Amino acid sequence: MMNRRTFSATLVAGAAASLVAARGMAATPVTAKVRNVVLVHGLFADGSCWTEVIARLQAAGLNATSVQNPLTTLPDAVASAQRVLDRQDGPAVLVGHSFSGMIVTEAGVHPNVSALVYVAARAPDAGEDYTALAKTFPAPPASAGIVFDGDEGRLTEAAFLRDFAGDLPEAKAKVLYAVQAPFQKALLTGKTTHAAWRSKPSFYAVSTEDRTINPDLQRFMAKRMEAKTIEVKASHLSLISHPDEIARCILEAAGQPV
Image 1 (cartoon, one colour):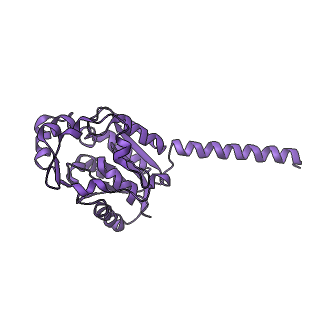
Image 2 (tube, rainbow, N blue to C red):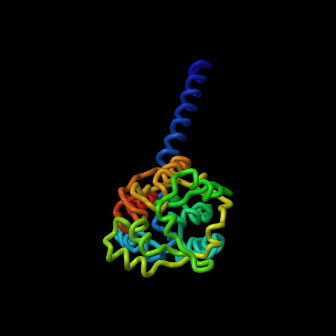
Image 3 (cartoon, rainbow, N blue to C red):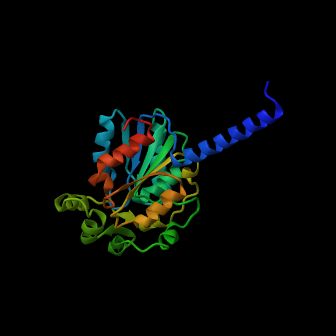
């Protein structure tokens, strides 16, 4: 028969084990096995930037959908992602690149979202001024290459080739530059009202050679959210230059074999 002392010791040991397990889950997110992936693009791009990753996800038997972000305002962009999430036939991993980390952070509270993946992406807290946060780190070179025609912004060709797509073959980078989608200035003023990474398993792929979002800022955001983090020796466009690594990160978030 268990006496009082033995019972107390067992209770303490159980509590300690639970605490260790909880901390371990924060460092290594536990995710359910899902088959749907929703991908969102950022500035200077469109939904086709995910094609290399999508091909790998489809080969693994997953259903992947790339959102066409309107690049007008943050509420518009979030709504575009929510509409795609609504159409999923079950849980989905929500993936964002670059600016669309704002969308993942906000739309990620959707009940269909099982996990979040940030690819060299913004990851603000609820109500946080991302611009102010970014200014606490050295400015990335690409910032100087943004030009505006009225309220419509885009990257110059030199900045696109050097600072955005620096590890892609020049011919391929020039094609991507030719189809870059301009964004509206109002998009940059939006703030998130939710931080989905506070309640959903999160993963982060840092681009170590990034000249668009400071790699140390990426590491700070990944650490703050206790994301399962990988580092990819890539430019800002790791999803194109290193699709195998990015696809594996997404597969892990989906609970699939990698």
